[in-house]
Image (cartoon, rainbow, N blue to C red):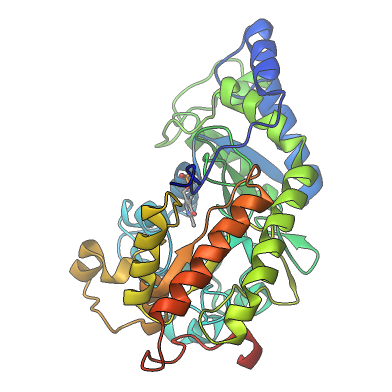
Length: 397
Ligand SMILES: *Cc1c(COP(=O)(O)O)cnc(C)c1O
């Protein structure tokens, strides 16, 4: 039996406990203290973001975004179906309606060519999700947003430290949302951030995030007592988590480089299988600089995907599928969607497999994963299997 190769292993950069001890010594372990300030400053500077507010999760940042836009019941928000549940929940819980649009077969990101036809008089926002840390086609989405007066909220949960042209993900829409969950590139257990790319929403964001009070203005000395101003919630990240996160953010470059090496090693060693049409590899367009959040492969069909996943599990390698498209989930069906509505999303749900991917993954472990994939496909794939469900990036227009 192989020693276990897990799917994910949280990476500890080194100074996490040291900074947590500092936070404790400083005497402030609730939110918006020294480490929140330092984390926000690093991201604002590096990513060119006007204001970063740390939140307890990306889910919280998405919910805060929805609250900030003052959406009314019945307002529509365009988003992919191939995403995490929080993208939709954040808008539905305030009464807005998610409108699911299919994804591109190459990047598995929101298909910008299908967005315009989904816009109605009720559409208020577009939520592009940068899947696997690869950017959506933001130029076209921004043009559409301008034309129809829509807001863009980037779900950049997987896209921290990745770019579209020379702009960092999260800095392009009016709002951007990051995740520092332990499965992401830079972590603090549970954590996230809301990126505000203009001054317009900053004051209200502070208020909504701090229980609907103007406590932030009080701390800054601009009011002499703080009070209830709006319908808010508790979306401030504790200093303990911020201290942990700061140790990770100091290692942006090291962590990203290491992930790139792991990504490249998988890519090169699996390339012959793609050339044999046995699987399809991830596609990163030229205008996108990935943060290498994950490595996935697309198998020819669900039977092969599930069989390979099971085979790997039997030999102690944990590879996992990803999103069940929201439109085909029980809640999505209640919204009136049915199987077949968004074919590319459904193929990604059925055929995608994510391989073990973490900082400490060794070349030997990677070889072991690749060899097992090769072995399984050579024994189980035959001429009768349907051709590639998703065209290979090389043949994409
Ligand atoms: C991880 C993830 C989230 C949720 O992040 P949390 O910090 O766990 O709330 C939201 N959207 C996408 C696309 C994600 O991958």
